[in-house]
Amino acid sequence: MGSTQFGDFHNFCKDATLPVCNLFSESPTQGGKGYGGCSLTGIPLSNNRDLANLGSILLCGIAILITVFLIIRSDRKQAAVGRREFQLFLVGYIIVEICEIFTVGGFPLDRKVRLGFTAVHLGAIVATLWVLLLNGVVGYQLLDDGTPLSIGLLLLSAIALFIGTGYIALDTAFGWTGHFASSLNGSNRNIGLYVLYQLAPLIFLFLFFVLETILVLRVLGERKPMMYLFAAALLFAIGQIFQYVISKYICTGTHGKIDGALFETLFTLASVVMLWVFWSSITEDDWPMPVAGGTYT
Picture 1 (cartoon, rainbow, N blue to C red):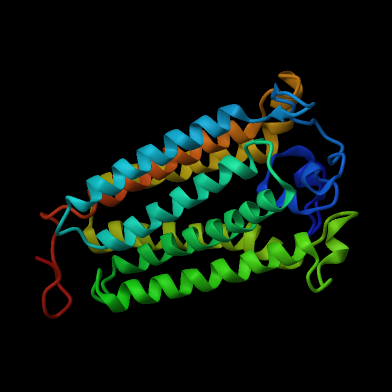
Picture 2: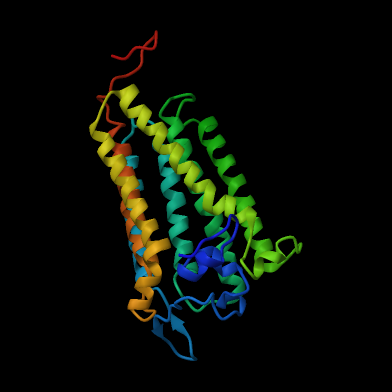
């Protein structure tokens, strides 16, 4: 991938299939001819239409089913710390995957419908990873988990991020105020979306892993759950490498049939499953519980 300046999306969109790329003028969704890289053609349909990224679409469907199963399994852990909060993270992930079917998956859709799904997709990504970060805080029991106060603070803050990100995406796509009009062409420089969509999720993830590492090693005094946490981080990183680095080579090698988005979806799903395994492993009933004076029994 060529060098990319802060705030620029063009090179990302040239080499990878990202939902944010639907917003800019070069996108076929906006009537453009693409970003100059390998174009996904997928399966030809009638009236000169294509169904691109079928593999990603199918994997998204599988991811939704698996996540529903994890939500049901989580409900059985009645005494688990942060059960409701972690279920909210899983619900957020389901919303992300539903949107991905219509943003990264190449369904023939009306322009406005795809742009609407794209805005929801971007907002859901930011909000879901914010919820994951707050799950890392929940383990420290600063507030009683599962209470209306805990759930309310989590939901309200996530909704605020969702609305903010979604609005910027919609204003960029439809030009309501004209404030983001300069990002539609050229290097597609959009600082707001870059910070919210590219940087904030990475910061949320980093802080989550730091918080959980401290919780497991310093508070619980355990080592085994770290294997699950490390596996989740590794799987997520592999998915991002496929998305941002290897994608263009896969697309070229398959003549536009698939690209790295398929593998990003697969490894992200595996990462979410490992996060659930990690969460489940640290919420067992036999962990030491805090008592007065800050010691553990």
